Each structure stands twice: as C-alpha cells, then as structure tokens.
Amino acid sequence: MLQALQGVRVIDMSHVIAGPLASFYLAQLGAEVIKVESPAGGDVMRANRGGEGDTPDGFVALNAGKASAALDIRTPEGAAAVRELARTADVFIENFRPGVVARYGLDEASIRAINPSIVYCSISGYGQQGEWAQRGAYDHVVQALTGMMMMSGDDPQGPPIKVGFPVIDVAVGMLASLAITAALHQRARDGQGQSIDASMVQAALMLMYPNASSFLTSGVEPQRVGNRGYTGSPTADTYRCADGWLATAANTPAQFRKLVAVLGLEELCTDARALDLDALNSDGGFVVAKDLPYLRERFSAAFATRSAAEMERRLNAVGVPAARVRKLGEFLREVDGGGQLPLPGLRFAQGERIVRTPGLGFRSADMVAGAPPRPGAESLGRSTGRLAAEAAPA
Image (cartoon, rainbow, N blue to C red; front, top):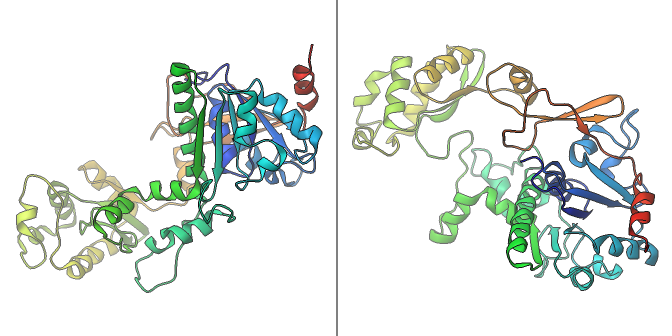
C-alpha cells in the first residue's frame, strides 16, 4: 500500500499544516510530490529552530519525501514555471485564499486549460464560494465559529475552551487526501479531471458529525458534557483517583454490573431512585440515570481512594474500557516498542538526525517495524534546477 500512488505526480502549492499534510499522505503512498515554495524563506514552517537549518523537525514531519521547487509565483517567469510543471501533473493542490492564485494564472480554469484531466484541490477556511470565502482562517478561529469551543468543558455559562491542538488543520488535510485519492480512482475509470473544494469549516463539521447531524435533523443543540462520554451513561465519565485520573466507559448494563462489582457498589443495581431499572435490565441499549448527581457522588467517592493505574488494569480485565489519564509523552514512551499495541510509525532521515512520526494512522502489510528510514525533507529550492531541466523543451 505504501506505493499505491507510484507514478502519480502532485504539484503542491500549499503551506503550513492542512495542505502539506494532504500531500504528505500522497507522498508516503508513493506519489511524486513537488512542493512549490517562495524563494523568500519558503513555507513558514521552515522557520529556523536551533541548528536544524531550514528543515526543522516540525517541517520534516509534514514534508518528508517531497521535492522542493523555489518559484516566485508573483513573477510571470515563476508562474509560467509552475504551469509547465502542472502540464505533466496528475494533482494540483493550493491553499491560498479564494481568488489569489487566479491573479497569477494558477487557478483551476487556467491549469485545466493546459491539463484537462488534472485533479485540482483547493483548501481554504470557508470554501471557494459565499460571503465568507475571503475571510482568513486559523484553526482556533474556526473552532470558535463552528461551536466547537462551546462543546468542551462542563459549565454551560463558562468560557469557551478550544481543543488543545490544531485538530481542524489535521482533519482537513486528511479529508483532502481522501478526496484526492477518490478523484484519481474516478479519473482512472472515466478519464475526467476532478475539482475538490475542501474547507476547514467542512472538516470541523465532520469532526462534530453526530452532533451536527442531530441539530440539522432535529434542532437539538449539543450540551457541554465535560469529560463525560458521548453515550450519556452515568459511568461513562472521568474520575479523580488517589494517584491521578481515570476515564471509564461502563455504557451498557453488562459493563455497569461489572464496574459496580469491582467497586463493591452492587446495591445500585436495585436502586430505582438512582437508575432506570427497565433500561438496566434490558438486553441492549445504555444505562440511564434518574439521579445523576447522586450516582456521580457515589462513584467519585469509590474511585477517590483507589489507584487509577490499578483500576485501569482491573476494569479492562473484566471487560470495562478504562484508561488512566496520561500526557502525550507519557503515553508514547509507554507504548514505544512495549508491545501494548501496534504503532507503525514512520522514520525519516534528515541529515545526521532521525525524525520520527506516528505514521499515517493505519497499518498495512508493508508497514513493518524496524524498516529503514525514509527520505526526509529537502532544503528550500533543492530540486528547482532539476525540475526546470526536466520541463524544458527537448
């Protein structure tokens, strides 16, 4: 699978995270990706970090395996060079504000005029049409706009809380790579070029898919639930323990009965004031609380004197999903080669150092542990001359 896109040529005029992540997927699946950058510093993610030159780790993680062409699209010569590259390309990616690339003859119509079968993907904040199309967008701004900030936390009147990492940037990059791959498959069937309009707003709504669908269908506004689970079961929650925090997911009646057995709270299974006993005694569905504050008090008290690490082990052993709350680094150190789960990360050789990533988010047979490092990211403009020579008329 890691060579599934071998023979596909991609022109990538994107920068920062979303577009580069989309083309990173394509590159790691075998495509030839040409990253077009401004000669004046290139992608902002190249910003120098210590002694890493213009290929710091964060840049490498998004741009490994791509060729770098330093071309100033604001000049007629630079724009013409990009069009010449696009003449033999299969995919063209850009993430400027709508209308910007048209100034330089690099919009979809201009590129399709010289390459009718190309897959042209535009990534933006709000899409290519509509009153908001010209607005600038950053991850946390779109989180605010779409209501995502008001779904975190547990106080209905509390301040907005953003997701702690650029979740929308990553999501739109993944969705764009999916759409591009599907468009290539469609083109292989009918020979037609495809147009893709991927936006951060669309990605945000997909991340909130169940909630957005519920509101669009029934007008149900999602409520802030803090660290409780999506099902609403009283013991799909997060509890303070003696040595940290523990998340549990005793959603079903069977899971609930196992949880109370471990905690010595079996009497709750017959407490009609606290629980909907019809739901608890049914063959399917989720546990339903009648008195949620009382149940939270009982379970909070039971967990408070226990070890989160020990509870994680015991609950998982009886079939109740549970995890001690960890920091990212703690989790990665724990599972890195530890055998707990397969983590087929990718390694990239960048000069004298190795840049490691968690991979592509899935496993396939050719993702093997201990594989040699893959090529890293090129310094700014390294392939400009080679690509110009290849594009020159014979």
